[in-house]
Length: 525
Image (cartoon, rainbow, N blue to C red; front, side, top):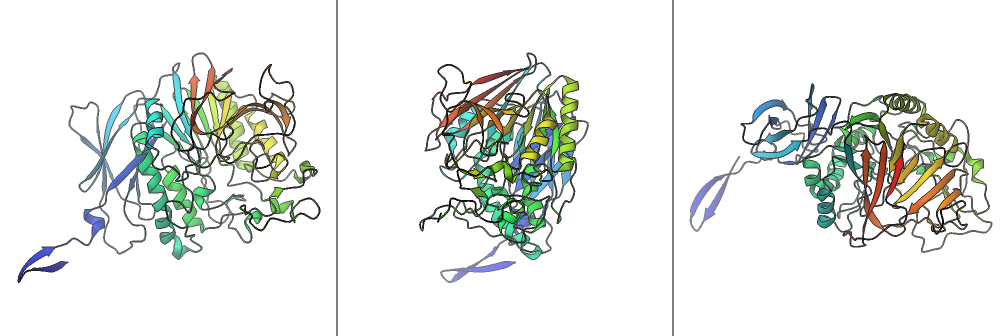
């Protein structure tokens, strides 16, 4: 299309390209992951998911070379997926132990990075773990630079990469199919800010990314096996259309190894839980929100002391899901048929753990939220959003892990905690590290009313053995009350040892050099 521009009596004919999709689609960042010789690269672009005008989007091309001085070789060409504004490349028979340089191009836009060589068996795999990225302090340059300076082999984002109303972009929920493109445009306004901040960290190393409640525009989530929410949030299910859920989750997880049981499940929601082998370490990548039962199945009305009323200036929005009566026995809320992972994911986890034990390798179980009530607004409340509930579902999941040589890694609760699960007895389950919040407010604390039993000499009173509000056994090693930060986890595959570290940040979301009681800790297998 031509526009005529007049200048002081003369005129200039200027041709403006209005089809910006065809000539000005820019590459924003990439995410990649390699598993058993299959490399998957997810390219994020700035195309508009609401633009369905029929004009073709430009192709995206992947180029490789073995050495910096070599010429680029074109390997694959693929299309942009309009709804997610992504392009996915899949390379089979990948040489796992060699480094390659990559370039992706789309028109005149290009992005370059390095496919790292997979660390050899017998080496120490370094993983950086990050969680909960509210826009406070964005773009977190100093903190991310410190993470990059650690030079991790692998990065784990445990969920809440975005919050639904951040970056001056009020949430728009796609309630039906026609709203999905608009809903994706709204979501991408937030997720692209996340990508802008972390793209240098993701450029040259593989990433694992899983979604939590805020990533799918839910404030707490009991997914009920992928069902659509039909009432209040405590009745369970997703508040948005399944097509939107699938598209949003794909932007974060599309580069992961192929899903074990992709579905669709429930009312049409896909699943991504899967296994990853990398650097001599096995990872079980789980979804402990998607299949979880809803509290309305066991709670009909708020459990609170007689005469309780919420204050007029109440800042919280919970309903029946938080038990407020300090004398209420929360073991009454359990039922054998209630789900945490769902039956099929439990079967997967049991098989994965058995295989890991036979292999003699170290492993990690990656989930959204810790499986104990160790992060609290009040020491007497009990929140069913915690994966301490349902107790039967939690117990089946821990038994599925069994004696596998693993550490569990989670996020969600805005509090760094380190503890060991008890299954039948104290200290017979896996060690769990719930990562501190990277930038969301460190709003929860671990401050039990009673001192811990059987704690180490001179250890803080909030460490040792406890029974949480849901009756689960935990042995606390440390809690980073009031601290933001991130984790570094070292898997020493030669000596069968895992070390967990807490790297703290202040309330400006900048790194600080402080010791956090309980970290670092080495777990010997």
